[in-house]
Image 1: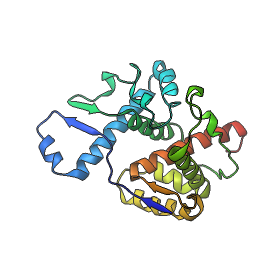
Image 2: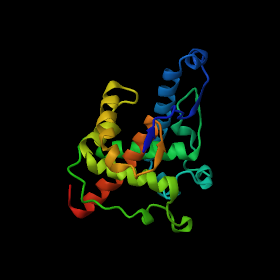
Image 3: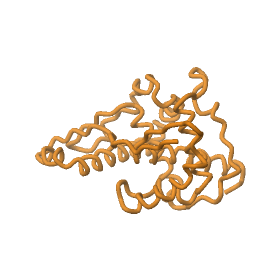
Length: 217
């Protein structure tokens, strides 16, 4: 049972102003700026109703599938990029940012009640043409769902916390208490802080939608 927090590689952010060289010398600052830029971009996409269908269809592509990089024209839009910045990203990075943005948009202000009884159907999480999620992706989903059920309040706090903050670190410690219960014997997970946050955000988001339908919370 191994969980490794890999080096965080969020996105290549090309800055067109003079401070670019200085940022390259400060990996942490660059990393935080890159992560925020991708998150802000995803949040901007969610503000447009005309992009809702494209977003929903995009989120039905299995994470890591080559089709993630065939981004719809509604998902690559100049009006969501800030002046002076050029985002270079892959589809899986957009997907992860979208789930964090979705959770913060709809559930940031209210912590969840217990979610232990919420069951999600993994077969419904991808478009039928892709079949079912399997392998590492299934392992991640089982792990994240179990982690959320183990401590929904800590999972919520982790997702809404500021990246790389001491608060986030504290929540990671709380979330990590679920490791013995949530990692399948013999399984290995190598994951960054940001990717851990995104899979927890995805699980929380889907569980809270389901709980609303079920009248649980």
